[in-house]
Amino acid sequence: MFSLFLPERCVHCEEPSAHARNPKTKEPFSHYLCDVCLRMLHHQETPEEQTIRDEFGKLGKIIEYAHCRAAYTFVAGSPIQSVIHSFKYDGMVKLAAQFGKSISFLTPREVNVIIPVPLHRTRLAERGYNQADAIAKAIASQTKANVVPASKRARPTPSQTNLPLPKRIENMRGAFVLTRDAEKIKGKNILIVDDVMTTGSTLASVAEALLHAKPKSISTLALAIAEQTAQ
Ligand SMILES: [Zn+2]
Image (tube, rainbow, N blue to C red):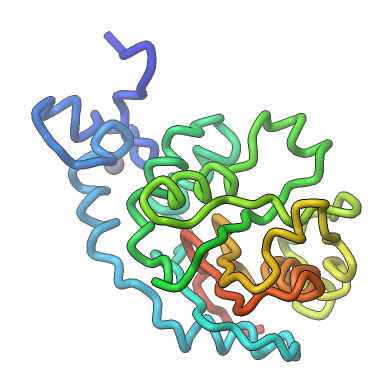
């Protein structure tokens, strides 16, 4: 029998989940992944901050980030890809929250405000929730920081998938504006959170909008950074 609330199959390979095989396991993702895929996930190295900075550097922007972090590398065909797909398209918001909790240790110590990359309201209505928001709230629950929705999408942006870098930058220009809550981030150390960072053009565009609200520092945290391929 399948559980009514949690999938008992691995979201990546569809083998029985680690929890289905061993209900006593304390592994936080055991309801969603099998033992083999869990091992693959845990063997991934955390990307270097410099790798992420280099990506932002390619955008030609002048934002100085205090920290740029990610927990995983998003490799095509890997368990993390299936995990992110599951919470983006299959409504597994609890899975997003679970991952948010597990990456909260990457929050820079000085951060007091967390800002999820917003979805446009039409996309939000389709999906029912914003996965970046779910991750941000879960991180906040483990830290002293508060989630402040200081930015919103000014317009829906076409899908970035398969767009070359110059087009992505163009696509995101002016895509984000400040909300009334933005005044709460003045003088704060803020952390912008997203699920996947590909070129960084989305995170950078949010950061640019938030600069106008005069935060003390800006850091970024993505659950995963796309594997870098020659562009
Ligand atoms: Zn599996």
